[in-house]
Image (cartoon, rainbow, N blue to C red; front, side):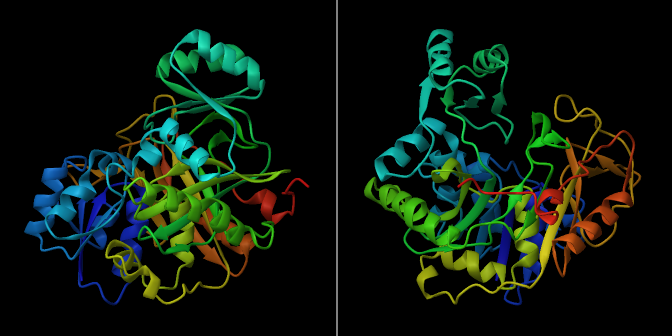
Length: 415
């Protein structure tokens, strides 16, 4: 199988590692890829959100499967264009990707499907936003209705900051706050059959102790030793299958990766958000533990044969990833700094580029992450931080508490 992987971030590097590890794969082409992916796959230039350009490249490289990593190409219709060429694509149609492309649409689907989620209002002006903030009270949750690369959500006690974020975004969804630990659940689906992956937890705030602004994610770990037994079965029954059924009812079946972001509240699991693709950095830890060949799994979802796929197999132990961010991230990350120590197994590239002289340079806010496995969560955490300590990047920062609360048994699900 020849696989074209679309994207160039940390998620795509993790996907590339999984794909090249599948014995059925004879070659991976990544477009545009990154310097980390370049060590294991052929790189090609492409405008990732241009459906015609990606479809043409898929034909040119004779791809048997196209795996679309980021959300923007999915919302733009890249999967549709690839399928129109008769090539299997892992990723939802543009219509189905609205589950991520519009928070309002996602809420409509959840309401129609009876999915447990937060109460919410869509607001387009200061007056309606103010009313919604007053109705739900603090902490205030304000979400950009459209795509925002994981950074469109503000959760704050400051009403003024909530109003300012709404004004900056234009169209927002204001929600009631959901109290409880958060869980990310990835579900591979062909629109009917659905296979859940291991639940993970990520860390959105930039600083230790969940301080500072939201980011695209500063680290993650899996599995979750504190998760209630039966959690995945409950989410599949009450969230995933009703959502997929509602999408089929609307003649826009969702096939690809459904990301379910959850809060485990005192009233039970509640959906915070849906995404239409693998999350970053949770992908790094979930795929590090997946023993089942990745390309075969994604191809089954892309070709409507997931019901016949064997049960998933998982490696023992745990995985942790810690993100190394550039100076100034998330507000105004500095780029162009030289990176050393990034040429070791377990270092995932997210925002890097090569200079003309071959030097590795920072090229984004989240630059690298150290991803490691271990016999248990504590061992995986120690190994991930050992990787991060070996990276040198001027002004960079990382959280020091990724997975610490789980290791120390300090996470409790509300009764």
